[in-house]
Image (cartoon, rainbow, N blue to C red; front, side, top):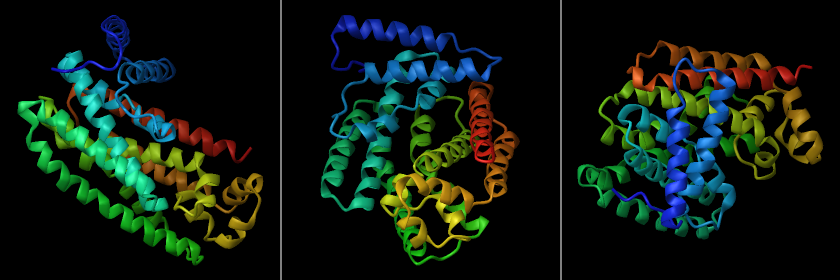
Length: 310
């Protein structure tokens, strides 16, 4: 199985040894802070090891470094090479989705052209594995399913610009739709390779991605307003403050205006529901860390929301 990058053989071996040590040190029972810190270290090592991606858009590639799928593969197989292969596929697919996301936001054809190149490289990686070549044609179908989100996103954008209001159900649906690339696309790579994988694992991946997307929206409030892109905190705020007023405010005032116009309880409810949904799902023991991540992500978000009230 091909797992080499653009590093020298010696550098590859050094990174492989470091990755192996870090992942083998992750054993239950987990403690939130050390666990998350180890995830960050694993992410950095994986990114350094896998340098095949073009660095034209570093801001996009910063969002392709989630080690979750690598960790899921390793905990189920204890095979570093197989786990690295899965990491590369999922990372490339994530990059493809993010590039198309930027294309639909900006209509800059450079993003779509690069996405096409990434798609080609994914197919080449899939072609190298005899047992997953069915993903070459099924992945196109799965990506087409997710592409309906971008049409939905444009509808939400139109409604925000027109100062429409949004119900809790609409905000929740938008969040779950935005995070549906996890079960629709990336989880299918695990399904093709991992012996213990089942659809319940895909559900947990969906809930975790939804929690991470809440955090992304929290961090991107100003950027999303500047680019007129849907953001669940803005969607909540326009129920009380017209969007054109938010848009006209200066950069430093935007976040305060949005957060003053939202109801913290709405987002606490969404976080609680996602965490409770994760708890209810039964998954194989090899993937138990995913439920632990749900707890970590939910608690982190609650901390951010509580900080707005102080």
